[in-house]
Image (cartoon, rainbow, N blue to C red):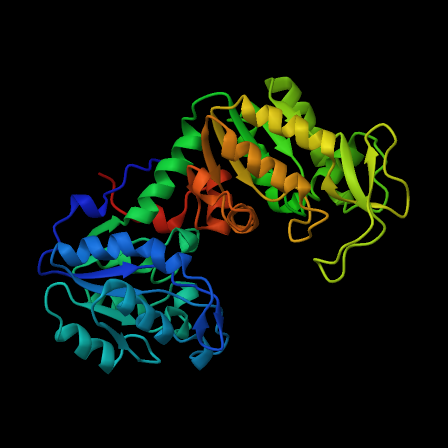
Length: 404
């Protein structure tokens, strides 16, 4: 079992030192304007702590997926401007297409204690995503201490998330990363029981390893969303034109057998809200019919949300839990007719007397959009990272940080 007892920003003395902080500023931009500032806000506690401790704070992040080196639309310049407003002090933007260029070196050399510099998008360098030199050592040359606070990128072994630590002995995790390790790590490795996990989303293939790992940890596994139909078909139930991965039927049978053997309860939908076609556009109001497990779903119809009885059953299971981890919506959550299952589960988590953890991505968006965000114990900032964490994988951006 991986150890998550990492050195944090509370354990290090940064006064007068140059501190390189890997943040997650991968924010959505529209015409150069940031449309969702959650990731910037989430980084502020660590940045403010390092400023108040007298560090020289050098921030770095990726943004988007630039294909061929520097692209203006992926520049972090708008982030520097917004950060400056939120921190109430100048944030010097080092506009070097090569990231560690003359601007960055000059800006860092001129820093006083408590100053902040933001480097350009780390993915402007081809080496970044391949974790190749000389970019790792160039980043390291700017600093004395390295802090990783980008959980959303912790599952990637990149220069700015892992490679840099080959050259910097003093390192730590920031508050955001620490919170993820506390909640996700404890939930998976040492949960208060009963421990209920809810998995949704479209494809069973995306969650194979998660299911397998959680069968060894959870008391109940609730499966909804498109991925439920492969399980139902594996049980011999007619699922009509619902999304099914026929190559995974044997896998689903195997998982159901393993769960029975281990005494883990697997809950699958007992009814589905169905339509004759996927909504186009995705939020179009469409006609639906509820089909049950007994009737099966007829040809020409597809399950696009869990039905009302399933929603009640899942909510009742959540009400009895002490720890709940949820990853993936129960249906087409963007559609007003097909989001009832997701709403019911979100409401059940909001009302539960339990530690409730939302594993990034679509379920985080759904919970926030429905107004239940502040009722959850923890909403993960990493989609892919939280999934790999739930799979029990060691994440490179965490493994490279010193243990206490």
